[in-house]
Image (tube, rainbow, N blue to C red; front, side, top):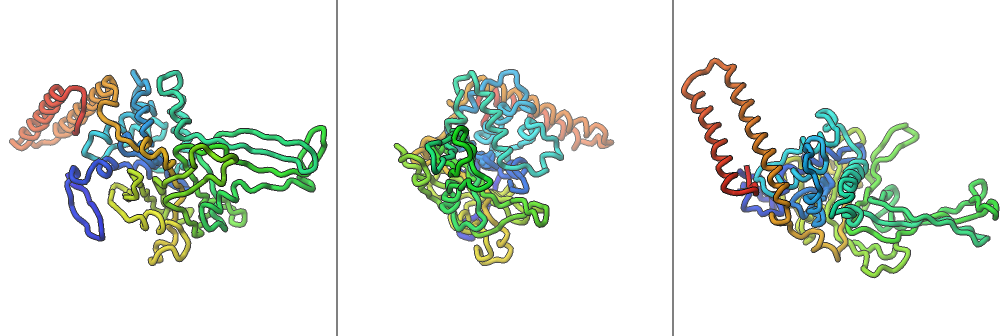
Length: 430
């Protein structure tokens, strides 16, 4: 089996095994992202924009996350992979780690309750991410991996209203799993963060009801208390336009960077610097009526980027992954790129890179989970071969070629079960 590998403008056909885990294990996952995270605001995740080896994000995209080897530790005994999000995700991760072929994602989409037609409809990336994390977090409750999801993805902020003329302040601590940043009339990511924490003056008819103090002029705003190890930034490219009574895309040029420092936006100076490294860029080309979706991932946090364009995975330059996706009319030399811009960014705290992106080995996967997945694979193979044989039965061809065809199927089955017995519970290919 081979795949296309592009580097320095030279296209080569290279055996998958020669490309290395950091690239080959992503095979087929971009298609998953595009089927599951599509929305008028966009397309992963995680890895699902973010999915690759159990050290992956997105499903955007999650799987680049070492603690999401915790996904392997979620109790799913008795679960059906077509109905259980947790078991379906375990199966996807397992297939990515050991299969040499593109990984099917039908079980995962089905486990969300999405039928075939629904899978091709656009889904809001934030909605998808929140539903996925919520389902995983609930499934982890009461287990040894409880708390993994908030540990990785949850940040905290404090919203406040402070009266200007009396001593009265109201505060409320809130949690978040992503941050929506405005891009309209903003030049870069820092301007958006500055706008996010800017205060609003409550005055005139909009004065604050301060209880015993009556209506008071006040300042309203938010301050970040802590950012999570894995930070999802949703760039608000798609917004409602009251004039046209429709959603429109803002393709304004908006700069973001490979490394960012978010210390200035925290309420207090953090013990660990809030320095982040860009891990993934989800990109949309087109307008609010549709378009094309691409994901760029920096698998090891070392600046070596990969491009996921449908089922084609290739190396790409840092410029192609970042600068070409700023948006605006002058962002690239080709007119076709004018409507191309990033709509979600995934950052990993620089001090956590080695922890978050470390490898997950076979020994990290519970043996009973391997057995259940292998059993499911054996059943699927027998069922698939059975369907092929039944289809051939209805044909009038009774030649020697048909007999050879049936013999080949049973030979493959025999070899498969023999290899399973010899290899034990670890599945290493199809």
